[in-house]
Length: 125
Length: 125
Length: 125
Image 1 (cartoon, rainbow over the protein chains, first blue to last red):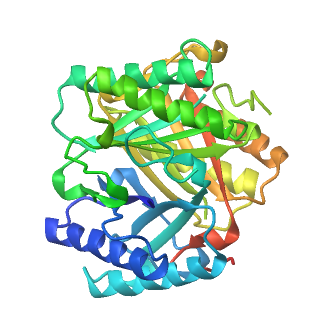
Image 2 (cartoon, each protein chain N blue to C red; image 1 turned 90 degrees about the vertical axis):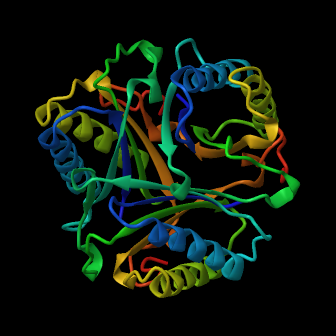
């Protein structure tokens, strides 16, 4: 049930954006061991004037930067998060071919009681 | 002061999207007892290529799926959240008529000191 | 590494939206003491039908309302958050000239281990 919101500059072809979804799904399968077809993700495309980034923390970013905000169960360990970051950067590097400098990830923790994945139920509470 | 971000596929008529707002507001009034006119919500519409969902957790979803991410005070109980999920699914089922399988809700908790609802003040700290 | 998502009504000129970015960056520099060029922000513009707000909490808002959701380290104090709210409202009031009633801010806390600002690393864990 991770819920992922991705923000990037507008203009990438559809195949490129599908590859982002595919690689993120694969990273979650490997690093978080999520069940099959547990993929819930949106992409928002931004014009240049609506997308601002800097080069803080010694990382030289480009217009290919993607912001990835992932909400997950608050039971994930720091080690799992590290593996997730590593796999996301590696897999996005393969497909669609994003430089690791352009992969910005933030995780939000949400308790199990904070999720309803359908039917009006709190499936994990 | 819940802040709600809704993501869905593009193409629904305006009345449909207004009904989503109306039903969510009503659900918050009933389940969280929020004050009158405490409604702060945005909808982002996505093309098919920017909207990915799966059928994990035994729920058969459709292109009518809506992702609803709600940030609330971290004082809400698990029981209140359960009631909220139930009311959201029920009311969206009435108007605009969304199947309960297509209602995906995630709650983010934020401390009272984390809100400024205008004037540069921390009204609830 | 704050990550900021801004939502507002569509139709403001580019210079107006750039001024929002500039003022938020300046507010973070002053209130949170973030490093130089630590600016990671997106703006999403919404049609009227996708943007809902009320006048709860005694604040008379207008169509110029901006929702600002800021994810920061969970080490920030309540006092820092208060200063941040005050500076955001003051600076947005100067440029692009937003009324303080129309500045709605929500902060999300994320642990240091929850951030990867590039390279697949957890830089702050």
